[in-house]
Image (cartoon, rainbow, N blue to C red; front, side, top):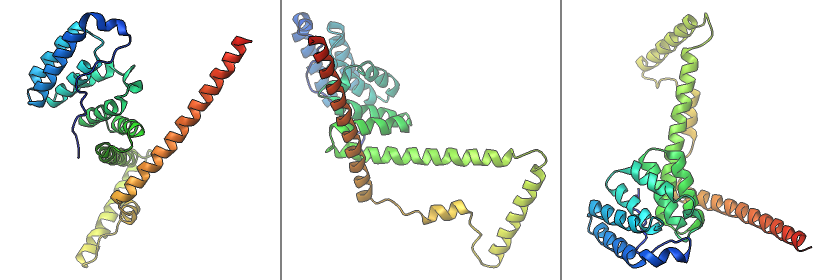
Length: 248
Protein backbone atom coordinates (compact mmCIF):
# COMPACT_ATOMS: atom_id res chain seq x y z
CA UNK A 1 0.00 0.00 0.00
CA UNK A 2 1.06 3.59 -0.60
CA UNK A 3 1.53 5.52 2.62
CA UNK A 4 3.60 8.46 1.43
CA UNK A 5 2.72 11.92 2.64
CA UNK A 6 1.72 14.78 0.37
CA UNK A 7 3.71 17.81 1.40
CA UNK A 8 3.29 21.52 0.77
CA UNK A 9 6.60 23.04 -0.21
CA UNK A 10 7.03 26.61 0.98
CA UNK A 11 3.83 28.52 1.08
CA UNK A 12 1.66 30.41 3.52
CA UNK A 13 -2.08 30.05 3.71
CA UNK A 14 -3.26 33.33 5.20
CA UNK A 15 -6.72 34.55 6.11
CA UNK A 16 -5.80 38.16 5.36
CA UNK A 17 -2.94 40.08 3.77
CA UNK A 18 -2.37 41.97 7.01
CA UNK A 19 -0.85 38.92 8.71
CA UNK A 20 1.98 39.03 6.17
CA UNK A 21 3.34 42.33 7.41
CA UNK A 22 5.33 41.14 10.41
CA UNK A 23 6.44 37.59 9.76
CA UNK A 24 6.47 36.92 6.05
CA UNK A 25 10.18 36.50 5.37
CA UNK A 26 11.15 34.87 8.67
CA UNK A 27 8.19 32.51 8.48
CA UNK A 28 9.00 31.43 4.95
CA UNK A 29 12.65 30.99 5.87
CA UNK A 30 11.82 28.62 8.76
CA UNK A 31 9.40 26.64 6.59
CA UNK A 32 11.97 26.27 3.81
CA UNK A 33 14.60 25.16 6.32
CA UNK A 34 12.20 22.64 7.78
CA UNK A 35 11.46 21.31 4.28
CA UNK A 36 15.17 20.79 3.63
CA UNK A 37 15.48 18.86 6.89
CA UNK A 38 12.39 16.85 5.94
CA UNK A 39 13.87 15.95 2.53
CA UNK A 40 17.08 14.81 4.25
CA UNK A 41 15.11 12.59 6.61
CA UNK A 42 15.85 14.75 9.67
CA UNK A 43 12.26 14.82 10.83
CA UNK A 44 12.93 15.92 14.42
CA UNK A 45 14.88 18.93 13.19
CA UNK A 46 12.13 19.67 10.70
CA UNK A 47 9.55 19.71 13.50
CA UNK A 48 11.65 22.26 15.39
CA UNK A 49 11.87 24.52 12.33
CA UNK A 50 8.12 24.32 11.71
CA UNK A 51 7.51 25.14 15.37
CA UNK A 52 9.67 28.23 14.99
CA UNK A 53 7.63 29.28 11.98
CA UNK A 54 4.42 28.85 13.97
CA UNK A 55 5.80 30.95 16.80
CA UNK A 56 6.28 33.77 14.30
CA UNK A 57 2.93 33.23 12.59
CA UNK A 58 0.40 30.86 14.11
CA UNK A 59 -1.72 31.03 10.92
CA UNK A 60 0.97 29.45 8.75
CA UNK A 61 -0.84 26.63 6.95
CA UNK A 62 2.38 25.21 5.51
CA UNK A 63 4.14 25.06 8.90
CA UNK A 64 1.25 23.24 10.58
CA UNK A 65 0.63 20.91 7.67
CA UNK A 66 4.27 19.94 7.17
CA UNK A 67 4.87 19.54 10.91
CA UNK A 68 1.99 17.04 11.02
CA UNK A 69 3.68 15.10 8.21
CA UNK A 70 7.04 15.14 10.00
CA UNK A 71 5.39 13.83 13.17
CA UNK A 72 3.76 11.10 11.09
CA UNK A 73 7.20 10.08 9.83
CA UNK A 74 8.35 9.94 13.47
CA UNK A 75 5.46 7.51 14.21
CA UNK A 76 3.85 10.15 16.41
CA UNK A 77 0.55 9.76 14.60
CA UNK A 78 -1.61 11.03 17.47
CA UNK A 79 0.15 14.41 17.63
CA UNK A 80 0.22 14.70 13.86
CA UNK A 81 -3.51 14.04 13.73
CA UNK A 82 -4.15 16.74 16.33
CA UNK A 83 -2.30 19.29 14.20
CA UNK A 84 -4.19 18.33 11.05
CA UNK A 85 -7.43 18.66 13.00
CA UNK A 86 -6.55 22.29 13.74
CA UNK A 87 -6.66 22.92 9.99
CA UNK A 88 -10.10 21.37 9.55
CA UNK A 89 -11.80 24.77 9.25
CA UNK A 90 -9.63 26.05 6.38
CA UNK A 91 -8.07 23.02 4.66
CA UNK A 92 -11.21 21.70 2.89
CA UNK A 93 -11.68 25.04 1.09
CA UNK A 94 -8.00 25.52 0.27
CA UNK A 95 -6.22 24.46 -2.92
CA UNK A 96 -4.49 21.76 -0.86
CA UNK A 97 -7.67 20.02 0.23
CA UNK A 98 -6.91 16.83 -1.72
CA UNK A 99 -3.49 16.46 -0.07
CA UNK A 100 -4.93 17.33 3.33
CA UNK A 101 -7.56 14.60 3.13
CA UNK A 102 -5.02 12.12 1.73
CA UNK A 103 -2.69 12.59 4.69
CA UNK A 104 -5.64 12.56 7.08
CA UNK A 105 -6.54 9.17 5.61
CA UNK A 106 -3.00 7.89 6.16
CA UNK A 107 -3.10 8.87 9.81
CA UNK A 108 -6.54 7.36 10.33
CA UNK A 109 -5.35 4.15 8.68
CA UNK A 110 -2.28 4.05 10.92
CA UNK A 111 -4.61 4.29 13.91
CA UNK A 112 -6.86 1.53 12.44
CA UNK A 113 -9.76 3.98 12.18
CA UNK A 114 -10.86 2.43 8.91
CA UNK A 115 -14.17 4.24 8.51
CA UNK A 116 -12.47 7.61 8.99
CA UNK A 117 -9.75 6.58 6.54
CA UNK A 118 -12.31 5.60 3.89
CA UNK A 119 -14.09 8.94 4.28
CA UNK A 120 -10.81 10.88 4.08
CA UNK A 121 -9.58 9.11 0.94
CA UNK A 122 -13.01 9.58 -0.66
CA UNK A 123 -12.83 13.32 0.01
CA UNK A 124 -9.32 13.39 -1.45
CA UNK A 125 -10.45 11.60 -4.61
CA UNK A 126 -13.42 13.91 -5.04
CA UNK A 127 -10.95 16.79 -5.28
CA UNK A 128 -8.26 14.93 -7.24
CA UNK A 129 -9.72 11.89 -9.04
CA UNK A 130 -6.40 11.16 -10.76
CA UNK A 131 -4.44 10.45 -7.56
CA UNK A 132 -3.50 6.76 -7.94
CA UNK A 133 -2.07 6.58 -4.42
CA UNK A 134 -5.36 7.76 -2.95
CA UNK A 135 -7.26 5.23 -5.08
CA UNK A 136 -5.11 2.31 -3.89
CA UNK A 137 -5.35 3.40 -0.28
CA UNK A 138 -9.10 3.90 -0.57
CA UNK A 139 -9.53 0.33 -1.83
CA UNK A 140 -7.28 -0.99 0.94
CA UNK A 141 -9.04 0.97 3.70
CA UNK A 142 -12.47 -0.08 2.40
CA UNK A 143 -11.43 -3.75 2.44
CA UNK A 144 -10.11 -3.41 6.03
CA UNK A 145 -13.38 -1.75 7.07
CA UNK A 146 -15.42 -4.57 5.54
CA UNK A 147 -13.25 -7.18 7.28
CA UNK A 148 -13.72 -5.36 10.58
CA UNK A 149 -17.49 -5.20 10.12
CA UNK A 150 -17.63 -8.92 9.24
CA UNK A 151 -15.70 -9.79 12.41
CA UNK A 152 -18.06 -7.69 14.50
CA UNK A 153 -21.07 -9.41 12.94
CA UNK A 154 -19.57 -12.81 13.64
CA UNK A 155 -18.84 -11.85 17.26
CA UNK A 156 -22.40 -10.62 17.72
CA UNK A 157 -23.82 -13.83 16.28
CA UNK A 158 -21.56 -15.86 18.53
CA UNK A 159 -22.69 -13.88 21.59
CA UNK A 160 -26.33 -14.52 20.67
CA UNK A 161 -25.65 -18.22 20.34
CA UNK A 162 -23.76 -18.35 23.63
CA UNK A 163 -26.47 -16.38 25.46
CA UNK A 164 -29.62 -17.97 24.05
CA UNK A 165 -33.00 -18.13 25.80
CA UNK A 166 -33.37 -19.60 29.31
CA UNK A 167 -33.42 -23.36 29.37
CA UNK A 168 -31.92 -23.63 25.87
CA UNK A 169 -28.23 -23.79 26.75
CA UNK A 170 -28.22 -27.54 27.30
CA UNK A 171 -30.04 -28.11 24.03
CA UNK A 172 -27.57 -25.83 22.23
CA UNK A 173 -24.62 -27.71 23.69
CA UNK A 174 -26.12 -31.01 22.63
CA UNK A 175 -26.73 -29.70 19.11
CA UNK A 176 -23.16 -28.48 18.88
CA UNK A 177 -21.95 -31.84 20.11
CA UNK A 178 -24.06 -33.68 17.53
CA UNK A 179 -22.78 -31.42 14.78
CA UNK A 180 -19.19 -32.07 15.86
CA UNK A 181 -19.84 -35.81 15.81
CA UNK A 182 -21.35 -35.58 12.32
CA UNK A 183 -18.34 -33.64 11.06
CA UNK A 184 -15.99 -36.19 12.60
CA UNK A 185 -17.88 -39.03 10.93
CA UNK A 186 -17.59 -37.27 7.58
CA UNK A 187 -13.86 -36.84 8.07
CA UNK A 188 -13.43 -40.49 9.01
CA UNK A 189 -15.22 -41.48 5.79
CA UNK A 190 -12.84 -39.38 3.75
CA UNK A 191 -15.49 -36.75 3.06
CA UNK A 192 -15.26 -33.02 3.44
CA UNK A 193 -16.87 -31.65 6.64
CA UNK A 194 -20.26 -30.08 6.14
CA UNK A 195 -20.00 -26.34 5.56
CA UNK A 196 -22.18 -23.81 7.25
CA UNK A 197 -24.39 -21.56 5.06
CA UNK A 198 -22.09 -18.63 5.89
CA UNK A 199 -19.01 -20.55 4.70
CA UNK A 200 -20.78 -21.60 1.51
CA UNK A 201 -21.82 -17.99 0.86
CA UNK A 202 -18.26 -16.73 1.37
CA UNK A 203 -16.93 -19.29 -1.12
CA UNK A 204 -19.58 -18.37 -3.64
CA UNK A 205 -18.81 -14.66 -3.46
CA UNK A 206 -16.48 -13.71 -6.34
CA UNK A 207 -13.32 -11.81 -5.58
CA UNK A 208 -13.36 -8.20 -6.76
CA UNK A 209 -10.74 -7.51 -9.39
CA UNK A 210 -8.69 -4.34 -9.35
CA UNK A 211 -10.49 -3.17 -12.50
CA UNK A 212 -13.90 -3.76 -10.91
CA UNK A 213 -12.81 -1.92 -7.77
CA UNK A 214 -11.68 1.00 -9.93
CA UNK A 215 -15.06 1.07 -11.66
CA UNK A 216 -16.78 1.11 -8.27
CA UNK A 217 -14.66 4.08 -7.19
CA UNK A 218 -15.39 5.98 -10.41
CA UNK A 219 -19.12 5.37 -10.02
CA UNK A 220 -19.00 6.50 -6.38
CA UNK A 221 -17.10 9.67 -7.29
CA UNK A 222 -19.49 10.49 -10.12
CA UNK A 223 -22.51 10.05 -7.85
CA UNK A 224 -21.07 12.21 -5.06
CA UNK A 225 -19.95 14.86 -7.55
CA UNK A 226 -23.48 14.96 -8.95
CA UNK A 227 -24.88 15.37 -5.45
CA UNK A 228 -22.42 18.16 -4.62
CA UNK A 229 -23.22 20.01 -7.84
CA UNK A 230 -26.93 19.76 -7.08
CA UNK A 231 -26.44 21.15 -3.57
CA UNK A 232 -24.32 24.03 -4.90
CA UNK A 233 -26.98 24.94 -7.47
CA UNK A 234 -29.69 24.91 -4.80
CA UNK A 235 -27.58 27.14 -2.54
CA UNK A 236 -26.88 29.55 -5.41
CA UNK A 237 -30.58 29.74 -6.27
CA UNK A 238 -31.44 30.39 -2.63
CA UNK A 239 -28.82 33.16 -2.37
CA UNK A 240 -30.08 34.77 -5.57
CA UNK A 241 -33.62 34.70 -4.26
CA UNK A 242 -32.53 36.33 -0.98
CA UNK A 243 -30.61 39.00 -2.87
CA UNK A 244 -33.69 39.87 -4.95
CA UNK A 245 -35.79 40.16 -1.83
CA UNK A 246 -33.16 42.39 -0.23
CA UNK A 247 -32.94 44.66 -3.27
CA UNK A 248 -36.69 44.89 -3.47
